[in-house]
Length: 485
Image (tube, rainbow, N blue to C red; front, side, top):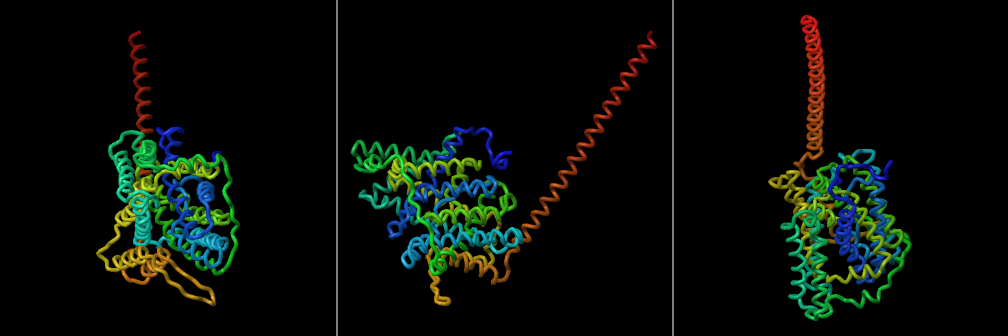
C-alpha cells in the first residue's frame, strides 16, 4: 500500500531528475510571494520572520497532501489576503493574538469542510457560482498587480534608477516569454526557473564587471550562517483580534473554491468529487491553524504555482511535494535562503507580471468556461461591485457588543458579491447545470459501457464461430483422408 493514491496526472516521460527540477521551479515560484508577506509585515512592525514562513509553507503543503490523499497539485504559501487585518490586529492586540485570529480563520475552514461533507459540494457551490469565484480570482491577481509593478520599478527600494530596474524586469520577463513560446522539449516547461536563473547569472556578471555596482549583495550571502532554526511564536487568543482576522476566511474560501475549479479546468479533472471539496477545505484550514499556531502566516492555495501548472502542463502532485521539501530545507539553511534572496527584486517583479497576470487570466477563463452571461444586468452588477470593492480595498468598521469588527477589501467584496448573487433575480442555475452535465456524462458512460459489453459479446460469438468452423474443417479433412485411403 502506497502513501499516496495513484492518479493519472503523472507523466511517464518525466523521471525523478526532471521531477526534482520541476519541484525546484515551483519553489522559486512561491519563494518571492511567500517571503514577501513576512517582509511586508516586518516593515509594518509585525514580528514575523522569513524562515518561519518558508518552513510552514513546506510543512503545511505536505499536511494538505496527506489530508487530500496526495491527488491535488497544489502548493500552500503565505496569504496576502490576511496582510491588512493581521497588521491591524497586531497593532491593537499584539502579534501573538493576531496569530490566534488566523487560527480562528482556519477553524472557519474546518467548519465549512464539515458542512460540505454533510450537505455535499453542490449546495455549497450554489453559494459560490462562477460569477463570484471567477471575479474574486481576477481581483486576487489584480490586487497583486501593483506589487509586481512596484518590484519591477523600484527594485524593492534599491538605489538604482527606475529605468535600470525596468530593464532588469524586462530581462526576466523576456526570458520567461522566450522559453514559454520558443523552447522545445523539457526546457519549455521551465520558464520561471530559467527566467530567474539566466537573469540572475546576468545580474551577477553586471555586478562583478562593475557595470551595475552592488546589484547582487554578496556580503549578505557571505555573512549568512549555513544552519539556523526558524523562530517560533506561540499563538494566543483574544476575541477582538479574532473578530478582525477571522472574517477574511470568507474571502479566502471563495479563493480556495475558485482555485480548485481553476485547477479542475487546467488538469481536466474534477477535484470537487475526488478527493472532495471537504478534504481540500479541511487541508487548507488545518494548514493555516498549524502555521499560525507556531508563528507562521495564514496559508492559502497558491495561484502563482497554479499559473506555472498552466504554463508547463506538468500536473504531477509529487512536484508540489518536492517543492515543499525544498522550502523546508531553505528554512534551515539561511545561506541558501540568502542566495535566493539576493536575486534582484526587479527581476522577480518582471516575472511576477506574467504570473500575477496569469492569476487574473485564470479567473477570466473560469468565467468564459462556465459561460457566464454578461448580457444579464445582475451579472454585470455583481462583477462590477466585487471588482471595485476588492481593488479599492474598501473597509467597513462596526461594533457589536463592545467588540470592534473590521472587514477589509477582498473579504468585503466576497461577502457583498455572495449576498447580491442571492438577492438579485435571474441567477444562473449553476447547480442545475452541473446536474445536467453529470446526468449527460452518466448517460454517455452507460452507453459506452453497454457498447463495450455488446462488442465483447460479439467478439465471444465471433471466436466461438471461428472455433466451430475450424473444428468442422478439421473433421472434413479427416473424412476426406479416410475416403482417399
